[in-house]
Image 1: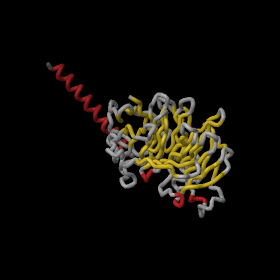
Image 2: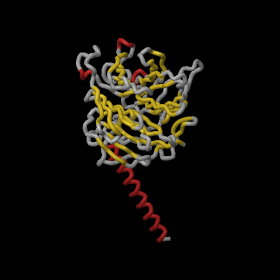
Image 3: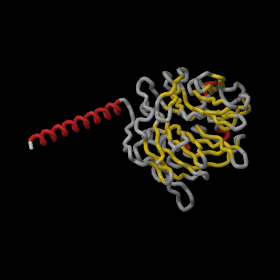
Length: 355
């Protein structure tokens, strides 16, 4: 019996040491500001046909490749995941699907925010917005700046250039694009395919309240007519505008704080910075999946969507302690989600595999 008891004590000691090291690692992570992700590896998040599991440790590149706020995401034709962060040691990180670093570049975007990947002819390019430089940039995928846009001098809407703080760009099939002044005065600037300024609309006088046009997408109907679907962040709704600025309707998302919308097939994926942000700044946030009619069918790490008898969506909130302020989201060809987060303790993006 003595050898067995000695073996049992040895196993107990190894178990104690293992759990002590795990606890120390968790405490260390918490002490430097990393969010605690409590969902177990096997936890299934979401509802209905849109359920996911977190891929532990995906994309964590360590201190040699740091991030600050993780703001914008894109997926190129090679399947690489591109991240835009306001860490000027490496503003753009390029990942493969397994979360390994392929490439990194950029040291001159202190206000890095929105990232839009656009195909122009046979070439993919990026449109980047910088809040601190008050500009929009067009670059190659490896960082060569092709063109830049500051506030046009003749809009009549700004008393000084630094009032303009563009958050994202939206792109029409014909090459025209729109710059959303989501952190400035809530206007939308329309540029032609040649890059020349055409007009400005929105703002308080155009019926867009502050904080207003933050992120969004161009929505092309079956008829071929395009509209702008705008994530209205603190207003807790999506706003549909005609391309000339006419309001076409809203989609309430009570309890959420929509920062970006990505459409894949017949579904839309919305990153909510938090529930009832900015009233509750310690809230976690969640990701909503909407169907073709913009009805919520799943909340990833959030409460189940519930509609009343009159069709009104009831307030949503986060449920699982998974995210910390989702800011952007992209979906790959396998249906996996990638979520970039704001003010999340300098954490790299989160990947969730579809169940």
